[in-house]
Amino acid sequence: MCGTCCHEVPGDYVKRIPLYPDEADILIEIAKERDIEFKIIEDLVFPDIKNEKILVLTYRIRLDNENQGCPFYNEHNGCRVHENKPLACQAYPLALKRVDAFNFEISIDPLCNFVIQHYSELEKMDLGHLKEVFKEEYPKAENFYHKNKKLIFKIKKLEALKKILIPCQINLEEFNIYLQKWEREDISV
Ligand code: SF4
Image 1 (tube, helix red, strand yellow):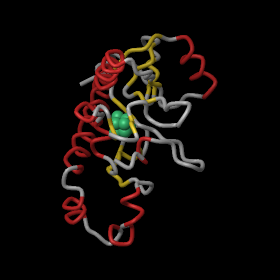
Image 2 (cartoon, rainbow, N blue to C red):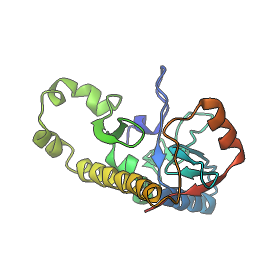
Image 3 (cartoon, protein in one colour):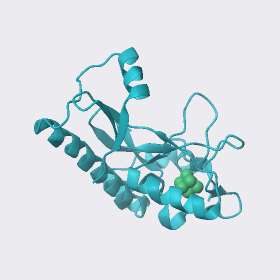
């Protein structure tokens, strides 16, 4: 309810609230029904140079210009899409940390108010205790992790079947041209 996780934070850190294409569709529908201005930005994408497409694995919520927060946040009632909020929000303050292009691990967001207040206790805890402290969030973080893994696996399988081709390395200039020209394809599981 504090809403810190639904807003930009001061400093260099960029707030990122990721959502999968199916979650994005649900929130777009809700926003339309309730006349809420809601926009998303592509987040994790891969260029498929075989089919000249940009494969979109995740989007992120574009924060409101005025208060730099999620448009679904309300200061009196908190999240207005509680039943439909993205897995990333359900799991918070547990988050997925990107290790490299294809690998993620579960981490704890150090910017969460609860984490800041209990940092010295949390840092000494083993995984078993952390699972108890975050007993509602941990299973959501696992779902989040598994969904991500399935998506990455799907990409790798399509590559192995030679249906797509993701370059191992790409220069930024080239990638920007692809981003401007190529069609999008959502990847879902
Ligand atoms: S969907 Fe709900 S919990 Fe998630 S950032 Fe928006 S207001 Fe916060």
